[in-house]
Length: 168
Ligand SMILES: [Cu+2]
Image (cartoon, rainbow, N blue to C red; front, side):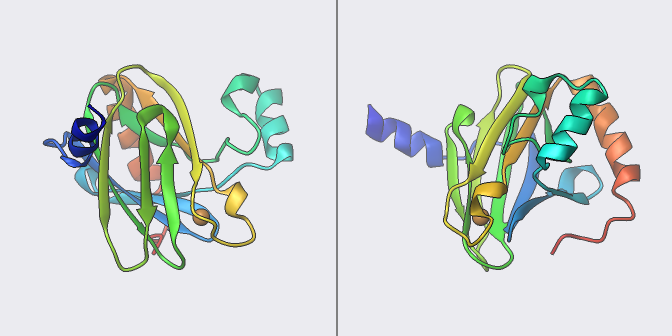
């Protein structure tokens, strides 16, 4: 049974949406080629930034230490999300345990993986390839939302990240 699972894991189904995750020292950037190709950088929040968000009303459970980021990856629930993974400097690895996803982010190579989240919520992962000083401090935060909330987020993100230069 494990061999069948391993095979199916690598067999990428027809994707509903594609996102590209780019590892760099020491943060992730994300591109949304299907939604106007905006991109943004996702950086870990410091203890002080987390404290400020909690003070402003964010539930503490949504900003866990070493995992909370400024800009989360947002994806729709129930959809096949293809994740293209690469890196801009050294090798990193994109891992989100709740989705069973773990794949190397290698400079000069575009790897692919996929997941389909069955429930809304916030899911975390971490870089899983030792990549230098702040290896422990470049988390992945994926927020799974309804189709409507995703569409609203995309509209907002297009404006918010329009002025941001491409990450790589
Ligand atoms: Cu890394």
